[in-house]
Image (tube, rainbow, N blue to C red; front, top):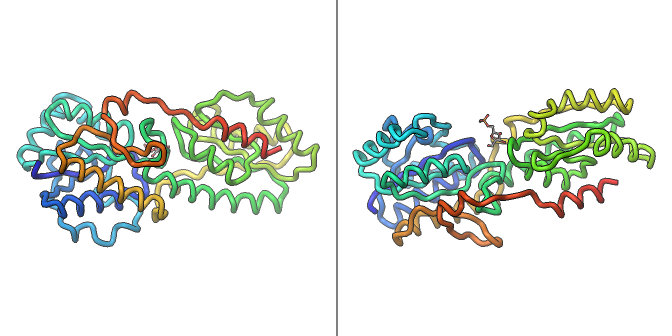
Amino acid sequence: IKTIGVLTSGGDAPGMNAAIRAVVRTGIYHGFKMLGIRKGYNGLVTGDIFDMSARDVSDIIHRGGTILQTARCKAFTTDEGMQKAMSISKAFGMDALVVIGGDGSYRGARDFSKFGMKVMGLPGTIDNDIASSEYTIGYDTAMNTVQDALDKIRDTAYSHERCSVLEVMGRRAGHIALNVGIAGGAEVILLPEREFDFDKDIIRKIIQGRNSGKKNYIIILAEGVAEKIGGALELAKKIEDLTGIETRGTVLGYIQRGGSPTIQDRVMASVMGAKAVTLLKDGVFNRIISVKDSKVVDIDIDEALAMKKDIDNELLELSNILSI
Ligand code: F6P
């Protein structure tokens, strides 16, 4: 391997820049030529590729988003698109590719490896929904953003003796919702991974709380559930109609995807980014960098994609106990 490319793909996540910086600088340190690819796999298909020096990643470690920009690329899902990307990669002399993104991006990388590219995956998504890894770059920052919002919502819910429904991101995974729900003392946490009963799990919980002297209530609604039952505003209205308690809904939206990464995200991104390149230097490829038992490890890409991840059941049970 002489030349390594790096791209970010799928939804952006705070800490992606720290990961790009670590990949580029570790690569240059070991004598590789480094290439940046813009807008995810799109850049590979269109040739939006440029040489990266150590200075190209200066002053980005603290910035949210991704300087390489990102996209979900349709063309890359076809054999034809991948052939084209392979020809373009060859034209640039690129023999290995580091992909920073989520499961969808890994599937693209795995398929691309069948065309001869040596790939490495780095977990980058706020959702923490990558099965092979306990942790993903951006997750900690997103949770802190939601926590900050929730604390503010709690202030006003207290003042007005209201119930507040907060809709948070997580189309397929409730990790943000669950952790922030625990940390913010939510009465009810609704996750895409779990069924729930509106009357029993929401209305009864609120009324029982009121009967025991509660004056305000927090309901966390993960995006994946909102897509099925209606959003935060709709749920707030239903709760108010049934309980008579004034209820307000808030949808946090894309604020959760931006912002300066936390220390944890910066450090994890730096460690993982460096590991991806060090492995390539040692001739190891087609792996996913992951966290397992709190250690940074690498896992075969096919194995990683076959894994499943669930939310932490004990934490969910705990949230029920602590919110009586
Ligand atoms: O990055 C993860 C995520 O925020 C999911 O929770 C959400 O479903 C998705 O991205 C939405 O992203 P977009 O609108 O960019 O497709």
